[in-house]
Image 1 (cartoon, one colour):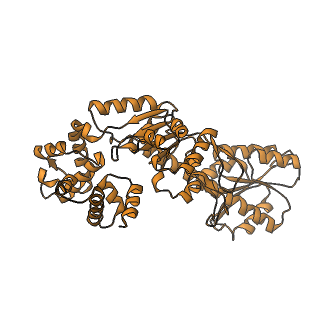
Image 2: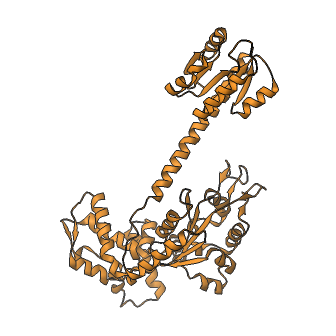
Image 3: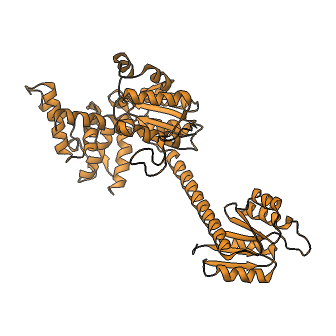
Length: 454
């Protein structure tokens, strides 16, 4: 309470002196005024945490109406300020009326010093908490605005890409669940963010969950949340990802990596539109829009019994298939121009250009890693460039490594193992970079490393 700023409003000078003497050594600032007409101007001059407000100011009038009036004025000006009412007339109905109007507590004259200090401390903590909540909400709104601010990363004018964007604009304004499919690196998360940005839920958050990176033992805790003490390491209450996305959008990436038991639990939430945190019994209603993404053939997985058909129907009201970069090569010059500007500014190499032969080489490549691979190739070329023009010789691709393996006499698994070993060595053990280079998900990479004992 040493940081608290207190404003005391009472027409009794002896009351003001007593409270100032009591509080001055315990608070950062204590100001006393005897005329409530000056109250609002004082509040505007400083950021007070607590107001101690008398309920009666005119002699012979003990209704408390004046106090209620000024309480309402304070609440209208700033509802985050904690107001404690003080009066010599202990009336339960008056106390209830004051609290209903926004007061946080009610004390009687004469007071006990310890009780008064405890009441002021409680009021200050509440005011401090309200300010923190206000800051967090403001920060949340700013973050949402920043996330939703249009970024021109969805680049392309090819027929294939225009069809995708037309479909995105049509479905974004609905509440339909959406499944985004396509190879790794085609921009599935960017499309999900664009759907959220164009939707009626854009003022709320979009929560992204990489399903391939969540251990099965942590699935329920991560998605549904838990109560303190629900399991060994549950030291605090925790809100899950699904509840966090309430009234917004939940984006489940790599949905094809979800095990059958976890699929059943997710389906139950989607069907019932409610969830129950671990360690609790009370269901929580949820209202969210589900967007999922995968590079897996889910219909084929359904036939194989590795993916639930009813879950697929739940999340696949609309499917958006993203074309691979090799099928929209006419977009490559636009993408190259965008990434060149992005990374030349980032690495302070403004004015960089790409030669015609380099563009031709980029358009002739098959891009197994799609736009993500192109982005990585451009960034690398910008970093290593020594002049103002990037040529064809500044780009080298994985295809070169594959061509060297044409005469390889081993099995396909031997080639895959060798390729993964080479990538791990090249990326110095950075598995995120390895998965990007190979065009596979991190979970798939982990599985292959375990399989080959790497």
